[in-house]
Image (cartoon, rainbow, N blue to C red; front, side, top):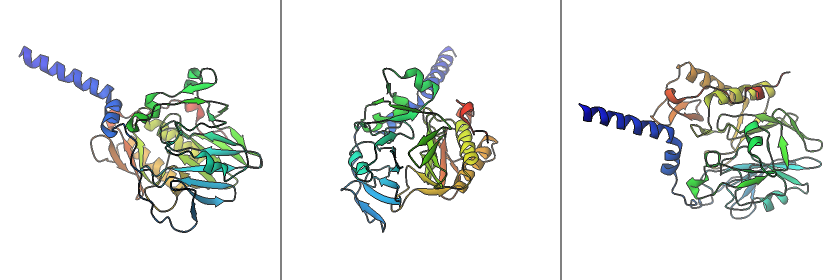
Length: 323
């Protein structure tokens, strides 16, 4: 009996360790620590041009460009958003190729790099930018040293592809619910956590565009990562629906070629409804870890099982801005 009890205690201890280290184990399982091979180039249809053998450019309007990476396995799409005085590069891929020459060929305005969040497939890694702006959150400010921010493994996750977490040299802090003035063009910074607790979206209300990063896009949405939280996701959708009356929603990944990962506020509403149903246990998921919940015909939410789900909100003060 004593041996059985000891074995049971050992199994419980190992289970607790596995739960506590689940994200490290997941990262080890999913990645082999090597850069992925490039995908074959395919016909992307009309309205696009290849900048080289890796990047392609789609013109959304004369001041707004989608810079796609169709040969990268994650099908990233980054956005150059220009005004009369300056431009924003919203995301920069994993940095296996330098996105700067492509962006600089599209505008003569000075460019500021703004990551939608700090995962390795968005921050450019080895690519260095003349000017960088990041969201002004208390836990990031506390860690900033000498004008820079050293990213941590859990917010970067680059070990999956052999990428070391970089240090970002920060020139500008962006206030949640604040405005970036590009000169004749204003972008509102929306704090849209859930996928990560440092995620932002940019709203161009005049043009009717929302650039959503990994907060929402067609396909599987990841909400089971180290700094994911379903309560934060609920806050993020509330912020978007309160701020935007009508918008084309441009995400940072597409399911596959051709075209852009474009959605609408209806999709944000579908995500809000799914989150409410998950919280109330009215929506069943599939699988053990992560659990897959069907949001709509074009979206799924990958989350932790119910007993691990966190419905708290890290920064509720950065929720929907008052009218």
